[in-house]
Length: 530
Image (cartoon, rainbow, N blue to C red; front, side, top):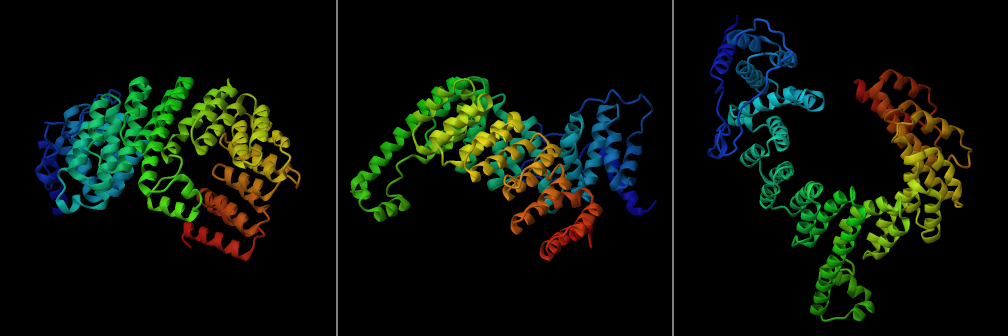
């Protein structure tokens, strides 16, 4: 046995037997994260795997030799083996030993292993590794601990703890993170705490300095709180002092309430938007008075008005904060419109600001399209004949319920361009249900007058992820060069990943422009390494 190998085994043996310190303790800002008090992080605590066979197991010395002697490429399998150790104390020490060496010698591979556990690993395995990681991180020397790779590991740990033990996540965040990274983690911690202790969560939010992160945190906590106690959450959100934070938080709260009580949410939306609009109008009037001019003065001098708005001397006529409620307004209207379209329309018309009204009407049409799509189209065609986006939203919602019926329903649209736009929305929505073969056959059967480049492009991009070869065939039929290249590129990217040989054959046999062929060949070469 080489001297270096013997040294590694000796270190690992000492670590396993002591269950303690290896390498050098990293304790920034005078605190040891392994301490057991005040919610500080600690090592792994796992339950034994009762499925493991009751056989004589290796002891500490044998495990230390196995950890030191195993190729790092096999550490995933070694960890699986360690998880089967019946003795909890031994199992935890062995897992720490594995993580210690992995962190020292191939942290990138360790991060990938954690990622795989997050996606498909047994929860107890992930918990055990994260517990060990808390101990292993404290043993890194300062230079190693400051590396980018370790920082990624630390962020994964904090993200995990934010969901499973937010108090520990808070300790780790404050100790090791700075600036926006810290504030982002505090947001995650607040979210985790809100599930059990809203007051504690709000105390964490109070520490967030960034208005953007604080608004995100308030909105997130508001949604969680509203699902449990809608009245309390609504009262709290409505009392937030800053209008932008209030509007954004109300948006989340009302969306949560709308899931079970859309009409109650509608009443609250009307009341809260009225309060925000009135507060904004009062502030605007004060600024207008301070400017020494009247509305009429500015109306007669557009240049002066634009300059005053841009400089902040006065504000626009409608509160931009109202726009932050668009998702709630749209969802509430959609929920109501399925059974009471007239009531949903009345809600939209009662709200302040043209932008918010229009977004609410979008929700009306999407909800109405699920119950009576032809009536919804009749309303939209009469009241918003030139709004293509509304028509697309309507048909997209119709297609989500019955895409073939929606495809036939585009015949209701007289204008050819608008009809094509609606069909694009139908196809895009239909692809969500993984109907690639049906979409492919449908597009191929369309008459030339209907099968526009826009329709083909929508179909190709919609199905390229799941059926890249079908998407490729559709894209080849696009006549416009730039649109064809974008569609071909999207399909080819998935083809190259799935089957490089097939991708090369398709490219060789396709009759494409030399420029397009070369660009796609460059993509292929980059993947296969030519």
